[in-house]
Image (cartoon, rainbow, N blue to C red):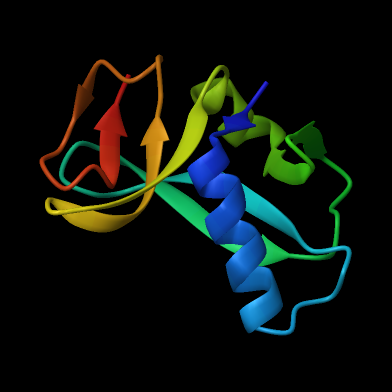
Length: 108
């Protein structure tokens, strides 16, 4: 399962409303090759499901990812931080053995 914190839920709902996204919009997460640690996170809003998607719901927010990415993201929590060290969505991924300094890439 992939979950969201209250801060991520609030920020996602704010962005969906601000960008006038359809009511059935969800957060699409994924993994692709690249970044300084080998794998990079992808994060976007979407409203169209694909045949191989895994769908989760946490705190009223739908989170969707493809099957391949899910293998790397099992148990991940999506958080939103707006602290002094940066602002944005953060992946708390228990499967990552190493992450880069910016937090946008990881290795398993």
